[in-house]
Length: 285
Length: 303
Image (tube, rainbow over all chains, first blue to last red; front, side):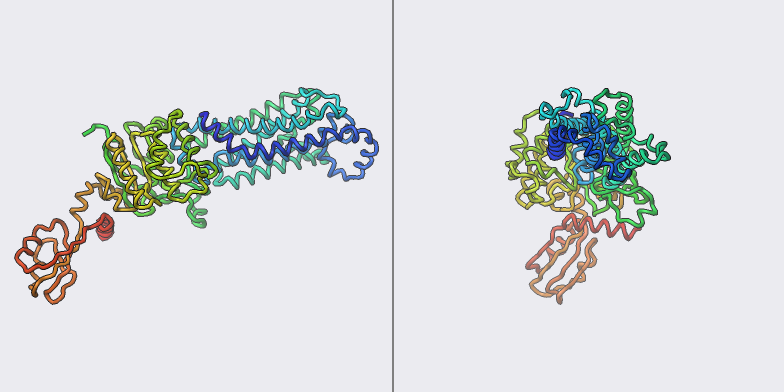
């Protein structure tokens, strides 16, 4: 199990570096601007008022820009679900399906490691990679915190990253389960990505259109606390999102345990009428 | 005979949607045997092997591998089996050494890779190069090393000689013969008939998802059709040969030479030739390919 965990973590190396570095630089860049922005808050608010409501609705309450929590929420955490969701969708959909479509899973699955242990090893490696990426985001904020004028502690800054992790887990688990149910990783990633974007927009527009509120309640970002978690983390939504992610992961595990593994390539829906229109993808030689 | 076959398949059926890949495969392979599995593309060879490893589940039928049901005990079956897939794909970013180390670790074999290094030397593969820079043949060697390195009791090899040059093929056959001497059972599929001829004790021929023949390799060769070209010092009455059982005339040259097709043993023909002014005999040894095609043609005409 350790071998598979280590190997999967090594495969995440590129994503850890690129996503970790991106979050680190973004965080590092934001913190020093806090004082200059709050110093000109009235001017900035006047400027922001010139933006259409449909635009500002996505970024929270601009009047709170003067507080560190509000500043970081608007400038960083408000769009973080969409940004980090891309990583989650790509990583989740490819966690097992990428090797299967590349024809590598056949030999790995023939080794003396049960499908459950293999699956759990990979999920644990993904969780570890996500934590490291998020850690880099936090590190970028903490490094210049002392010179920023923000009255925050490094421990306080950990809090808003916890819902970020829960958000990663929910979309990764969704993409993972879809990759186990759908014929291709590409399709699973597309559907999950579509839901990710829908989640962001529905939540944003629900701030303007009250009719959307009932739908927004079913969206993960409705429960995303953002920068305000620094005032006190609401563990309920975090646990609910993580629990849902766990349930989706268990569904993916069940599906992985019972299904046939492909030799390589993309699969089919198993519908005879559709098969007549498509070339066969599974080897029967 | 060992009471427990290494491989036992009973009425194995597997479909992919409407396509029936296996239509009731029955097979028993004894421990310590080298068994060649023949059949054209799409006959169901890979499907059969993948069912044995629980990579895919049959619709019905029974499988026992070394006395274990792979669906009930996949880990135990995998721990005793070395597998080479027909379409081998490895992580191209790793070196040969790293991928072998990874598989060695997955098998829980610790850090002793001496056997892997020995095999790498015998098969002449550089383990320090990234896999993406290796030729098809060299990747195949890595696949073979990972299957063989932990000396499993059973080897399931799907097209093991694919991409290997003749010298390496010979070395591989030697390695497989040694594995058998150590007690391993080897089950392999192949298109290269000469490989099967050289090493397999028995051969199973698969056609459209059904085993149509299982026989000793030597028996199959005996049963095969051979050709014999005979030249005479002076013209003879070649119609004499027509009367011999299992002999037919393919062509003749005014009684000075005759090309015969002989089925079964050549005893009758040799006796007849002893009475003739023969100056030269050329016989073509039948290949399993010809036997294979004979079976296909015969079964097709039956159908």
